[in-house]
Structures are given as structure tokens and as C-alpha cells.
Length: 462
Image (cartoon, rainbow, N blue to C red):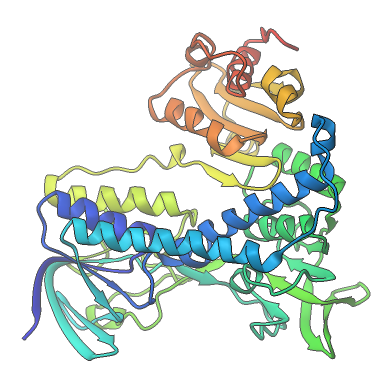
């Protein structure tokens, strides 16, 4: 006999478990199905969280080696204990995955361990260690996330040539790491291993890094990363990568082969839609493998919804969370909306890079009239005290209404600073609104105020 629920969610990543908790708060009987041994999805287990733990640890190591002396702190014989660094990373992940499990229990969400697949209208079959369990519900939400994309000619062996999953758990620092792809995943892993002593070469098919981000921001980032020791080879089409002897060989069209010790393939992600039984309810994916949905995340099958990476768009954990909440709130209350112009994106390198809203490139392409205000962190007192003065805040506002259209930051703690910009865009603020808001002194947030003032060419500290 099938287990009865109001809502079944397939996937316990950020989109799935957050949707489950919100649905339970709204009074639904919720089931959450997850095939991985630990909850939290790719983001928590082998993505966002472990990478940020290593980024933080590697940055502290780099500071101890190169920056503390300027603060009058003398540290001698600094050495790397990579196993300890990895243990700390794993401990952070374990604590958070256990926390997700506790949150589901607290909210009376029923967790089913195993692979979930659709088995006709309103039915899900879970295949786990104890066999098959049939579930039934009026509503089913697919939140199965994404996986690393492949590249023709690159033979991933899960050791010498791997994805970000393998790069998060190297047992030693590679002598020479080649990163294929200059998106945020590739750059974050490049930063980690470069700081820890590896020679890092980044290969990118396009003529720029960070595709999709503001080009002025990306150009500044490339300059600063190159200064830190990362080598970039742009307009490089990788045709093959293979293990050869004790190392690897990477081949690019029209260039000499590159010999290295490890290869990281980071050319994007593709949605996890295989094995979901979509055909049992008549759902067909699009050309990119994504599940088509309407503005309320409903698929073509009655009672079946989808959110997060499986529906395309920016593959960001917080986007999936917002979509999950909007989806279940619409189911229960009839209201639910996500403002995609107010979804920030962050690259957690040093300096950090953060963006929200339209890029200057997009505004030019659309013919939107705009004004631009830029303020460098070199003019910010707090940045000077921190010793991190590279980068700037760039604010774009409509030339006629002054409404903020986009904010792009490269500099210290940009990932935290972008929250103010996201809130401003969400509530339709103007650059004048931000400029007239008192910002505590001395703080990095003053750079946001100055950028807003610069839109009207009246910044104070430049």
C-alpha cells in the first residue's frame, strides 16, 4: 500500500529541503526523498560549503605566509598540514548535513532514503537499501539539482582528471594543476590550490573569464588573479585530456600540448533529470536537458512541479531556495514569486566578486539608457585598515528614473556587501536612496554609498 502525503519532494538539496520545511510550516504533510547518504545536496556535500571551507583555510595560509608581516606579526616556519585542512572541511560539511536532517525532523518532514522516480500520476517509487517504497501525493516537486558537465575528448578518471568533487579532496598539492573552464567553480578551485603552492593554468574557450558577469568586473578579476600567480590561456579550445604515465596531457587546438600533474574539468553543469521517470507522466526536457515550467514552476504534467538547477537559469543554491519557497507558497496560498533581477551571484576568491541585476553589457545590448557610478576600494578607510584595497563597486542606474538596475563589486567581502544591493533592487530603490542612507564609518559598505553618489558625479572620497 502506498504511503500517503500531500507533497513529495525528490531531492534534499537547498531547493528541496527548504521547500519541504516551508511546506510543512504551511500545514502540508511532506515527504522528502534523497538518494545520497547525507542530506543537503551537491551544494552542501561536494559544492558550496566544502569549497568555501577550503577557500577560507587556504586564504589564512596565504596570509600567514605573505601578509601578516605587514601587520607587525612575525610567523616563522609556516607549513601546510593538508590532511588537517581536509578534516576541518569534512567536519564543517558533516555538521551542516546533520543540521539539515535535524531541521526536517523538527518540522515533521518524512525522509525517505533512496532513489526517487515518478511512476505515473501522483506516484513516486523510492528504491533504497530496503527495496522499493511507493509514495502517493497530490503534488510532486522535482528538485534534483545538477552534475558536472562533460567535455568531448576529456577522459575523467576520478583521480588525475576529475571534476570539482575530486578537486575538493586532493591528497596532496598538485605540482601543476590545469583547470578547464574559467567560471566561478574553476576559479575558486584555482585559487585554493594556487594559494597552497600549485602552479595553476586556467584554460578558457572564450576570450574572457567569468562568462555572464559584467565584463569590466571580469577584466579586473583576471588582472588580479594573474598578479597572484594564476596563468590564463583564453580562446583555448581543449580537444583532449588524458592520463599519461604519472601525469596528464591536455591538448588545445593550435597549441602545444600541456603536461601537468592533475586536471580539473569545470565547464559548467547539466541538470539531473536522468532516471526520474519523466516519461511516465509525459514530461519532455528541452534541448539543454532542463524541465520546462511555467511562472509557478508547474510542468506539463498535472500536479508535478520543478525548481532549481533542473529548470535552468543561474545554477545557484539561493535561487533554488527562493523558487522552492515560491512554489509551495503558491500551492497553499495562491501567491508566490521570484524576482530574478534581484538574485545575487558571488565568486568567493580573494578578492571576492559579486553581482546582482543587469550588467553594463546587457544594458548596452538592450539600448537601456543608464548612468554609472564607480568607487574604488582604495578610497575606503576600512579597506585600507584591512590591507585589501584592490577592486571597486560599480552601480548602474536608469538614466531617466534613477532606479538601480545592477550593482557589481570586486573587492573585500563583496559577497556580504552585495546583499544591500539586492535589497535595493528588490524594493525598487534609486541610487539617490542609497546615497542618502547613512552608512557607518569606517565600513566597507561606505563604498556602496560612494558608488551611488558617483552615479550623480558627487562622490566624496575620490
